[in-house]
Image 1 (cartoon, rainbow, N blue to C red):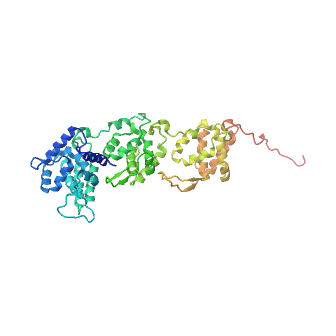
Image 2 (image 1 turned 60 degrees about the vertical axis):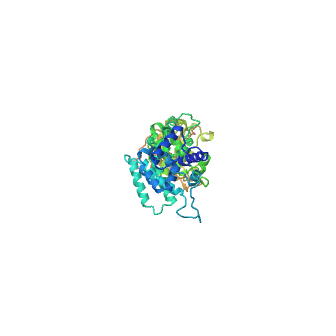
Length: 493
């Protein structure tokens, strides 16, 4: 439910109880009366108490409407917030405030004597809002006037839906301009998000209570405050929100439901959309992610932009600054530790390491660079893998088949299956050997088989060194013969 719908429900409830429609202190009510006085003047009779009653009077009498529009201008600009909230009411909510509104139904009587409809009140209200709200010194307001003129030129019949479309244009304008204090009756009504900004500027502040998830509902319901909040963020102070943004971008209606953000649905009683739109929630998260990092998503559709974000995240997720708790960043110890003992004694599996290095292409270079002298013990195992054929590798636990994961997670949808080639495995083995053996061989122009043979020749000279093994050095495969020069032999000797 949008900001307009939520606040209008409050307004409608107050009107039903006989209270003033304007929510606020007595000073705000007095200010509202003064603004309506400016428009109503002294020659039109008793002044209406609320903006919706003012619109009712304008819809009843064209001459009265013309007089009010003639008096409208900058002197009534403070009425813009309340007037736009009134125009944003759904027909059922407007009917609660003015029960005599004419509701057009099938087979209902028609004629010039029928009372005004909600469309009629909205139509005169849109003209009044244009007179009091737009400031010609603002570029956004000049663009709004052009957009309204273009939209009106395309209207053939002023149907309720076409009038509602103009209201949507005004709501979009309000998202850009609603932080102007001159558009409010009271200064306390001007949006203030300093508490939000302060709470989300410190990653450790109330860690158990604050996360971006707790704010998403309010950002969804109030596009103006969402825009101001996003603009207040920057990559230097708020980069820790990235991991939470990625969780939101990976979410779908069922995920939002579990987080207390039910899917948007039509409420026929109030004539409003209640709940939360998944696409809007993700759009907010994408805007925050863009502000809190140096990454700019590319693409036209939502899916393309989110895919590009996830593609970037595959490598960026290793950076601790993108997490509220830096220790929550992915821990690479599972890759780098556990190589002192043989696999039979609980040590890590080379087959598992090679497979993961192949699948983790985005962070492979980062992982490979972490291997070094402290991993000398896996060299003997890596040399063995250079000789493995397909069946031997499978016997040692290597699974060549894998499922391609979509860049953007999709619920209950698996990717196509693919196969890892043996040559790809050997290429990773050679990269590991360069780092763990601290040996730099010259492979310029060599084919893969020649590189493997060169590593084998290097191994023949160093294989008796115990540092290359995860356990005891295996016994020699035979007694090494001393060099014996050939001697000439004569027959008969």
